[in-house]
Amino acid sequence: TVPAYHGANKLKGHLRFFGTQQTTSDFDAAKSGAKLLSFKASNYAIPTAATTYYDFCFPKANMPSTLMNIIAIEPVIDKTAHVHHFVLSVSSTEDCDSGTTTPVWAWAPGAYDWAAPAGTAIKASGSSNTKSFHLQIHYDNPAQKASEVDSSGVILHYKDTGTFESIGMLQLGDGPVKLKDDDNWKKIPEGITSYFFEATIPGSKTFNVISDGLHMHKH
Image (cartoon, rainbow, N blue to C red):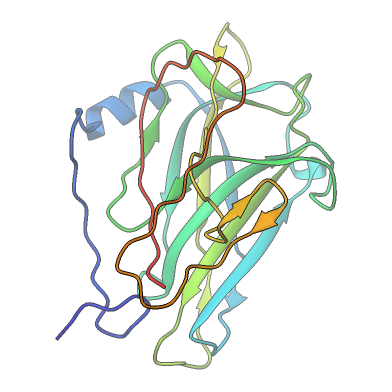
């Protein structure tokens, strides 16, 4: 069969082009002595639609009042046949409804538990600008099965003491896959065999890259 996006014969896998993959011992060492905070979908009824994006909000009321230095993130996958990927974001409001929402971590099949480099962490709660968490789960149901429920989510490993350098996620290219450049929307002309879309970072900035990930869609 031919692998197809969102088809019943879809292809899943993991391929590392360069760099060193973190090991289980790296993850275990990073989370040693850390506190836990779990965010999960609670028996969510998966729609019978072929594909669904659902946004779960974990408000400030569910978070500790102290500053969270998140040093490791552990994905918990319940329905492996239906969870396509998910994205964890932080929100500047207490209930995810407005303000700024910024992605900080993502998971897809083939990815592993994540650990921040020593001395670094994702900042949340307390005195940070992060007041709530937003978890978007992409459900894949090509056979349109009914009565499927899911409780997937994440376990955050964090420390509320110590000094950590703040880290985050930088998304490059056409993230929403909508060919948006400033305020202009573009459409790929019919009949061509290749198309180039350029995105730039305004100004001059220096980044220390600690990990990378690729994502693509077929249209």
